[in-house]
Length: 178
Image (tube, rainbow, N blue to C red; front, side, top):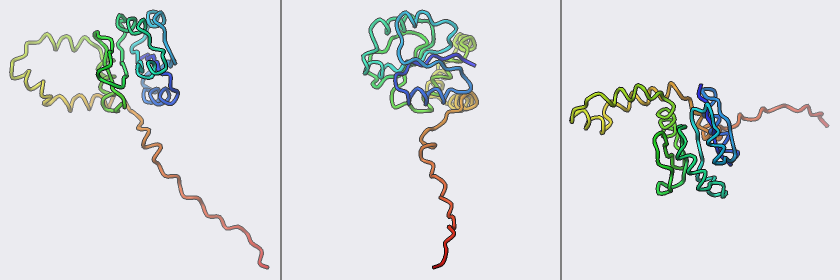
């Protein structure tokens, strides 16, 4: 179970993201965060920041962006535009709105997975052909998706909203003949 801090000012998105992470992770929801608050985070496995929403409500200061950039905590930075200036560092992934389930899922899996097996694989010598095949993604996609699906079970809120209500039961009301 991972401990995740979600910084999201919008209640609907707070609930949607928190529910998508439940029960595999313990989620602490914050409407805003300060630079000192980021520095004080201890024992957290992941930080999710909706930068676009914080920027829209004038809650994203340069000090907060610098604190996130210098933080060692893996971070998911949610923004509206790829051209937006997200902090640049290791263990920071940018997710563009609207959030797609598959993309969000893969980002979470990559940031929450232990880093030691990856380092061992990176140190192994790779031939030019193997590198080209890896860059094309041949054979890799099936393994990643299978691992993600077993680790995360997201709720697609569209399915919940689009369900048709059951038809009303027809009751026979007792009528007295006149």
